[in-house]
Image 1 (cartoon, rainbow, N blue to C red):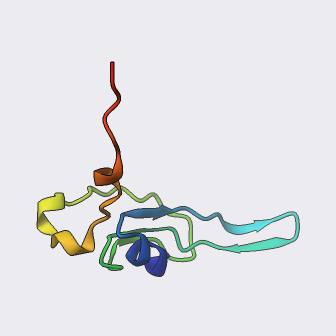
Image 2: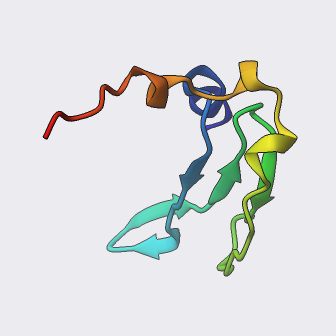
Length: 77
């Protein structure tokens, strides 16, 4: 998840089930990761409720943020 956040230069929220269901084991590990690949909040392998707040984009250097929004062209009316 940190690698995907870093390569796409955006925040990534990953939620995973933990525990066992119909013979399948799920490892948990839900996480919210910033565009610099640093986890902002993370859960372990036990049930958890994650509540977090995204930091302001101004707190990140521009080169760490996606420039995809700049690629949009305005619609003509």
